[in-house]
Amino acid sequence: MQTSKKRELQQTRQRIALLKILGFLALLVVMGFIGLLWFARPKTSVIEKRDLTEFPKFTLQGVWDGSFCSQVDTWYADTYPLREGLISMDTKLESLYGVRGEQIVAGGQVADEIPDESVDLAELARRDETEAPTEAAGGVVTPTGETEQTATESDAETEAPTPAGGANDVTTPAEQAGTIYITENCGYGVYYFSQSGSARYCMAVNSVAEAVRGQAQVYCLIGPISAGVMLSDEVRDQTGGSDEAEAMNWMFSQMDSSVKKVNVYNILKQHNNEYIYFHTDHHWTALGAYYAYCEFCNQKGITPHKLSEFQTMEFPGFLGTFYSSSNQSPALAANPDTVTAYIPNGTNDMEMYVSNGNGTYTRYDWRVVNDVSDYAKSELYAAFAGGDQPYNYAHNEKISDGSAVLIVKDSYGNAFIPFLIDHYEHIYWVDYRSYESYCAWAGTGNSSLSAFVRANNINDVILCNNINSTGSSSLLDYMERIFK
Figure (tube, rainbow, N blue to C red):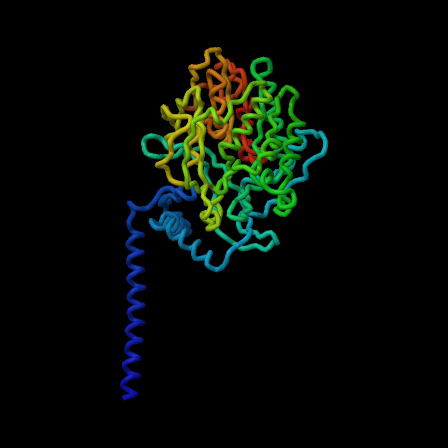
């Protein structure tokens, strides 16, 4: 009797083991079948905001040396139909191992010392350059210095989807989220000063000032990133980041006296108990951009509008570049942002030119503040100023004095632009990363800012970008080609 029970128990265990094997084999078959669904393979990652790997071109040489098979393997893994869901599941499973109080994503940069005096900019610019602090290194570094490897991805800038179906302007070189310090369910961008990059930036600004002297007034607005404004000096120092106020003061001191310096650091610091930076994204909020606008008005000698004078739109659930760069951090997922946008009073109509991805551009009638309720939660910052398109224009018919402004910007300028609409008749804005390419298509023959100023009777030129851009050699290459 006892032998019979043992035999029955053994048979039950064998059946369970067989069911497990059959279940695992079935899972492999299903996953393999899904992998064969060519038409279901994504071309872009919504969460990571980047183009996925394309199928490699077949060559006999590639087959011979094995590179073709390796590239196919990369393509298969990167474009697997369930990829984003599996990554999200993996991150959630990892979070079950314990709660991380603090972490630094993509750490490892070392800041240059900020000079305390005037220097030879040309000599400083020729020194060996490290790539922009915005270029992220791999790994997660805890404040104690221990490193834990994690996957990090570059974060393409959020661009305005076109009316034809949400295609992004993928030809615009991406900004990066860079080094991120995560604590208490909030991410903070950390800045690392670059001597050579900052010198090049100052020289580029001075070049613009010289080129438009007597024709337009140049304003330079450097947008601080969140760690320098929102964290204490002690915590910022623990991350290894640079003092953004000190860096901006030094850069402004190296610029031509004709340039009006819009130093927004102090006003943002005064309001750092408010919601002026997103928790899951590297941009300032529209409220942060509003305080920068107030400082610009102070420099220009005009009265800024009160926030109560604007109608607003709100888009909840935003999960931005910090979220995607941190491999979809559960801490950030638990604290999504709300994008609040202030609609300009002068006009909300604009025109923009969007890349078709093949060297051509299409003109669209658009809105300065656009309803992005139906957009992916990672793309809600596209509510502002059409996103990162190369050329944009708005005509405020409520003003008829011929006043014209040109804003040369990266994505930080997007939330800033709606506030300027009410103060000029003609408002132009270009993204320095793709404007040259647009000019080549448009046949203008000259992509310099001074040529634009002359052609459009520009009164004010506002250079508006975040402080990380001032140290990026790759982004400075774009600036230097048009900042003249």
